[in-house]
Image 1 (cartoon, one colour):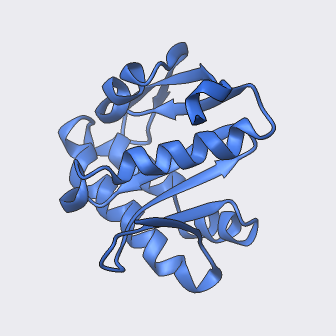
Image 2 (tube, rainbow, N blue to C red):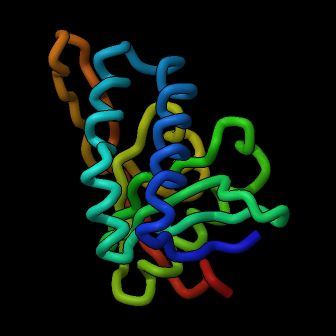
Image 3 (cartoon, helix red, strand yellow):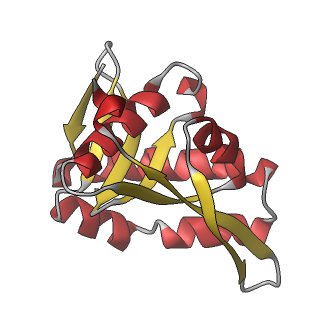
Amino acid sequence: MKIIPATPADFETVRKITQETIRTVYPRYYPAGAVEFFLLHHNDAAIEQDIRKSIVFLCISDSGDAVGTVTVSGNEIGRLFVLPDQQGMGYGRALLDFAEQEIARKYEFAVLDVSFSAKAIYLKRGYEAVNWHVIETENGDFLCFDEMRRKLGQEDFA
């Protein structure tokens, strides 16, 4: 497996991974309005802009398939998604390791907004909830999520 920078030619791949993961996983945890909010938040323009800023990365499996993506903007980890049929194989962990290493070059803390479906993963990893958010979506559903952070040290990358 390897992690590479996404290029403009990878837009459809990043879009597919993002949308397929949200559409498959999030309805198990969130009402329809919240799922739609996530899809709109990770819209084509946002993905394209982040790719142009060179802050989007792809996880490529040993067989050469793009199976996950992560966005690293400053000390913030965003849009970390692994295709549903590829989850549980270590790709998410590899993307998170990569993102934390990138962040640790310049920052003391990594921060991210965490969906319900991923919260346990980040807690096990040593992240702490520092804020809780509620957003009312257009159809009256609510989107609830935690803002989490983790202090990064050199021992994390030894």
